[in-house]
Image (cartoon, rainbow, N blue to C red; front, side, top):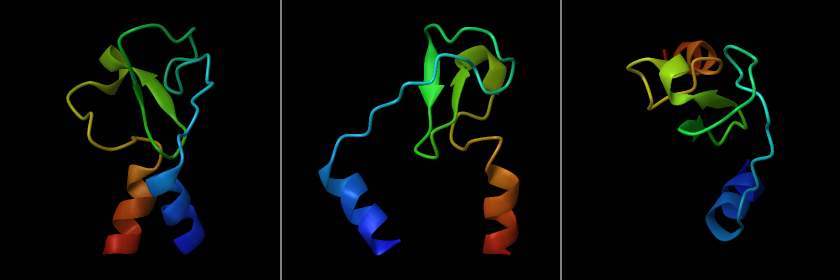
Length: 64
């Protein structure tokens, strides 16, 4: 995990998803990309643009 954190701090990350994780339609702008490598149309996220809806439940359970 420390290596991954160091890589995120020092290297660029390339996002190559071509489909929205939520609706599976072709990804176009405006789009939101998360570091977990999920990507969404902005309108598919609704009001929550700060956390990935796919990963958030798992992260919340770890935090609790």
